[in-house]
Amino acid sequence: MSMPFYVSPEQVMKDRADYARKGIARGRSLVALSTSDGIVIVAENPSRTLYKISEIYDRIAFAGVGKYNEFEMLRIAGVRQADVKGYSFAREDVNARSLANGYAQTLGQVFTHEMKPYEVEILVAQVGETQDTDELFHILYDGTVMDEQGCTVLGGQAEAILETARERYRADLDRAGAIRLGAELLANDGDPLAAGQLEVAFLDRSRTRRAFQRVRGDDLATILSDATD
Image (cartoon, rainbow, N blue to C red; front, side):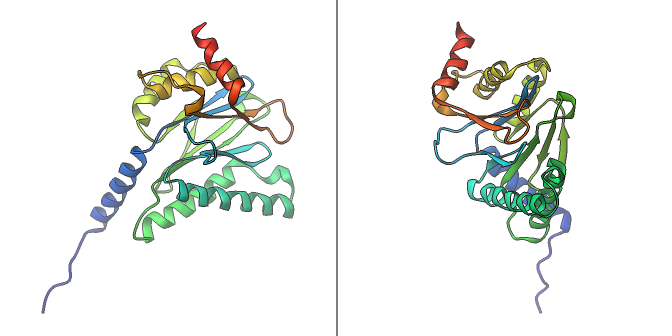
């Protein structure tokens, strides 16, 4: 009688984590920065229709890196959760913390119990009335939630970019300055990224509702060109 094949739980978890990290690292990075007038999110994304950054609710944005179909499913689930909670209670009851906790539970459950973990990292960002109340929740493939302050980087060469981001980030950056900094960080000492290679979104602190707006086309090109003037 043959003995059943045995793998320790520690090895299983390690293998799953390695698998997820390798998948995420193959993707392009994304940078989020809290600024004086809102939250700027910059991603390297040449596609004009497959968005990595989206609106979830009034003052909340979602961003994902890794496998598009997996973080898109998570985005849709978050939109539904936010809509139901806002309709059942009040719009003010929808917040980034509860959405981040929901995503963490889903990713943790998949990582622990499913055959293959999700190859994604996601960001839930909520712009506050003041910069001190901005919230950036970085959720990893295994459900780990990190409450980031000021700036964060997801996917790709995140560790190298984050080190540079923390050296160059300033709390008094405005929207245009943060967009230029994000583009420079994603270039990572390579050729400067053009507007067509970037996806940029902004959560405008001055808006009471629907704070999310995209920055693209001529507006984005003008902001980026100012860096070289």
